[in-house]
Image (tube, rainbow, N blue to C red):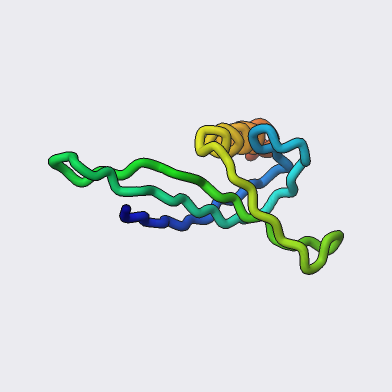
Length: 98
């Protein structure tokens, strides 16, 4: 079984929740890792997502204590979409030039 891991960062501008995790998370940039395993026996290269990990860094309130959540990628995308929508709604209006 061949496993590949991709890494990316996501940034939230507003406090957010993620899936079934009850804690309100703070705005910031977070690391995300996705593991996929290669599907054997197919005539083309294909991978299946195995897990997505969302890394919570240590905070001033919890120094030295980082955490990792296993999340549903759809929940992560939904949280990012809510954050983008909230940012648009709270963006100040720019003055018009006449």
